[in-house]
Image 1 (cartoon, rainbow, N blue to C red):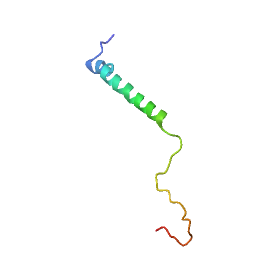
Image 2: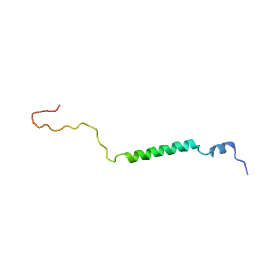
Image 3: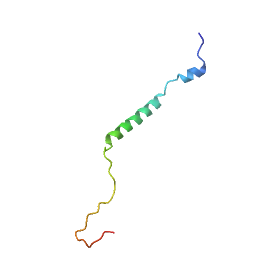
Image 4: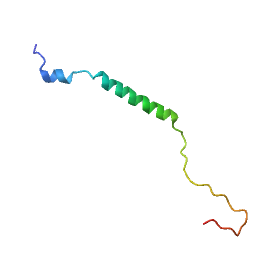
Length: 59
């Protein structure tokens, strides 16, 4: 049976713990963001009330 070469050993290397922690942190941030997001989008703007006197104009 042939022995594995250094290229195949590099391809089978495990993910470092640091990368696993960063991936878990990114997933956690995404989940928290989705939980805090509001389902309905609100449009930001200025509310202008209708004037009480008909001759007054808002410009």
